Image (cartoon, rainbow, N blue to C red; front, side, top):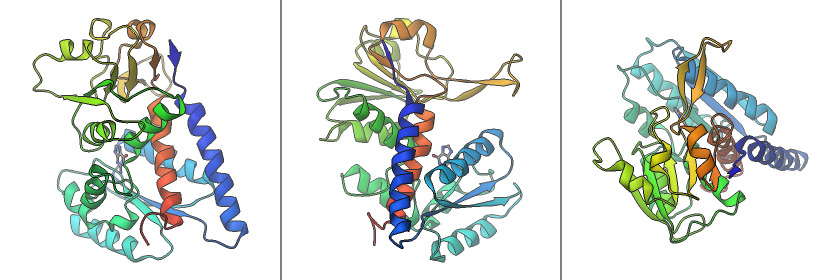
Amino acid sequence: MQLIDGKAVADRIKQEIAQEVAEICNAGGKRPHLAAVLVGHDGGSETYVAHKVKACEQCGFKSTLVRYESDVTEEELLHKVDELNNDPDIDGFIVQLPLPKHISEQKVIEAIDYRKDVDGFHPVNVGRMSIGLPCFVSATPAGIMELLARYNIETKGKHCVVLGRSNIVGKPVATLMMQKAYPGNATVTVCHSATTNIKEICRTADIIIAALGSPEFVTADMVKEGAVIIDVGTTRVPDASKKSGFKLTGDVKFSEVAPLCSYITPVPGGVGPMTIVSLMRNTLLAGKKAIYK
Ligand code: GUN
């Protein structure tokens, strides 16, 4: 079994990005600038956004954090989106999800100029990704593909089972894994809450991408010997022994599944750091106007 070290790969990519940013700036070019909008004080969102801001520093980007209390109106938020769309200094921006219930996430996503949508959530980017055109690919799926590539994991003709059908991970990663490219070219099955025979389907998988948000859902009896396991889960489970009071728990029961696998991502330190670095790469692409003019 080989551990897929997402943290080490992410650190290397951040260095590569920082190097390129230094070259751009030395040549008189513009320093990439990412803005993040954070609404409310959800613990997970606070942590993710703090990591994104820190990663911007490490990559040599400028970053701006825009904060609102959870009672901000949809109109106010849409106004800010419009302002960021029209600010020539901002190359890309994200609105951290989830948003409070009184705000339509879809409305906010669609209000973002797709040319600055470094999260890759806008329907233009989702649509372009699904037909294989240049676009901003959302960060978690892009990070998973990068890990498969950096570890030279064979995907062509393999049976890839994706657990979960979210717009952020399950659907886009299934789309990418079926595309005629490397990584990709796999036979893909997507399982979700209405799938009746998940265990049997998983047992036929060469690659399992678990993105359900259900701690330790994937157990040893669901995994074929030699399978590749990508664990996207990051649920905060209470743990009194930790200073924070919780531990991040994946969708895979690591202790019993790891010995069976050829490759597996740990939680934390697997897909998580790659998600952030993919956002950084999208921001660099936005800064260079490499996808959209
Ligand atoms: N919430 C969970 N993951 C993400 C992400 O990748 N981007 C944003 N904006 N919100 C999220």
